[in-house]
Amino acid sequence: MPNFTSRLFIRGVLFLGVVYFLIPIWWLLTASTKSSSELFSSPPLWFGEDFVLLDNIVAVLTRQDGLFVRWMLNSLIYAGGGAIGATLLSAAAGYVFAKYSFPGKGALFGAILASILLPASLLVMPLYLLFSSLGMINTMWAVIIPSLVSPFGVFLARITAQESVPDDLLDAARIDGAGEIRIFSTIALPIMGPALLTVFLFSFVGIWNNFFLPMVTLNDAELWPAMLGLYFWGSQPSELNYHFVITGSLLSIIPLAIAFISLQKYWRVGLTAGAVKI
Amino acid sequence: MTTTTAVRTIASRPPRFRAVGRTTIRRSQRRAIWLLLLPFLVLFVFSFVVPLVYAVVESFFTEKRSGLGIGGERAFAGFVNYVNAIQKTDLLEGVGRVLVFGIVQVPLMLIVALALALAVDALKGNYPKFVRLSAFLPYAVPGVIAAILWAFLYLPGTSPFVAALASVGIDVDFLSSEVVLWSIANIVTWTWTGYNMLVIYSALTGIPQELYEAAAIDGAGAWRIAWSIKIPLVAPALVLTTFFSIVGTVQLYAEPTVLKSYSSAITSGYTPNMAVQDVAFGLNNYGVAAAMAVLLAIGTFVLSFGFLRLANVITARRAAA
Image (tube, rainbow over all chains, first blue to last red; front, side, top):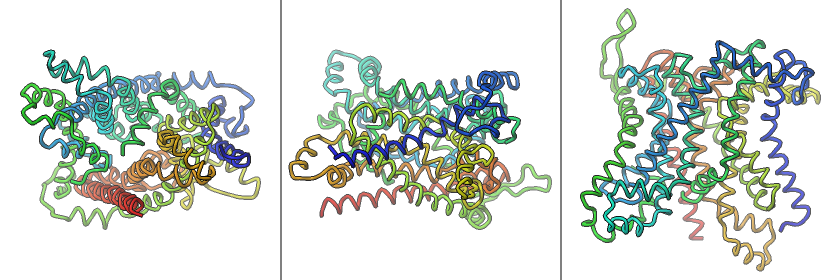
């Protein structure tokens, strides 16, 4: 155990860290309770004289016939649907990489991992042209299909299958006459379950945050995810719309914040895997 | 193709039944491999391989515009697009900018993350739990929102910092051309420090307790243990977080794109990704944009694998010493 002065120092470091992490969030909370004009006239890190949080929320939700609600729903569809698909595909692929051997396996796995390094701009432009020629530009598919591919998910699923699914169990099932697909879906998948929730969470956040791809492939505002919509609102800085941008930002991070705090345990699985395995 | 260390460690541990002999790979297993792998592979090819090939091919062609603009003749252009990408676009400037950014921001962020992780590890109990939670919260804030939030914290009218600094006689314009790159660095640092801290902290909790006890018996104090045991043992986590930070830095996009509306110092080709997008969709010059993107990809590979190689060499040398 460190001595008293060291501990005081350590506490000081942690305190500064926490202040740094929380100040912007605190600012967002207080700013959401202010009218646009009070943003400038009241103390920046405290509440103003009028507490208009509810008015601001109503204003955001009803602006342009409830476009914001639409954006949040779209985000849920993209991130929810994309993450479910990405998790299942990653689980199956990761399981194959962990439990079977076939020619070219190492090279294929290497190529999948290396794809993490490809710049978004390299992929987005050809995807735009590809979706255009398929008539899928400006449809939900243009966002969902690329979201279904998660190289990091395959990596995580492979580690999980390697560590948690015993080969003996698979061999025993084979001797009992179970087919390979059945073994995967009824034996391996349930064992991999908790770690797959981690894959789901990481994909969900990745898709929720993405805005490069939707910005290029979607021009109909009705199809935008929340990030693109808020970017658009924020790209017209004016005192008249500040409260829309600020309160909208607050509303848009609430679902993720809840998911983070309530599912902490599963995040740690991913973080540990990342830390130990490379 | 070179593979990451991760791939190598895993690939060197082949699945058990391979040892039994190749005859055990029955037909049913071969079918299962295809059935389970195919859905992922098809989409992987569609979303990664085809775009990559397309961009590489496109980078060698130019579209000769006819007088009316749209359409025109495709012609093989050799490396003309590459020459143009380097000479006539903001690419190099953007690359230089993210390099300066990365050289300062990545080490700074990881040193802070390491310090915080060591601090949390030193104090066991409920207090660190709160610290961990608040450190993770910024990661739950998407890059776009983080940038919007900080934009308001930088804007003179709404910023608590500008006012506070002005009251002690310091005038800062966080959105001016001299400062804005570091204002962006702060946003990235704010988002990722906690995440990286938790990765490092996870590695710290994996260190066997006996090592500390042995060191304490040998007379090592808390600081000495942190320096000589904890930090070397979390080196793999530091390598990993640095690797991903390098990749993220090269890809810098959301934060400067959002801040662009608040700062005239940010141009449409401020970072490499923004420059590619600008040439592709602003100027509709796909050939040059493709060449820029390919150059950027090559640069990313060289940088990130160069770093991994360097890390391996250092680790090997330390192990030999």
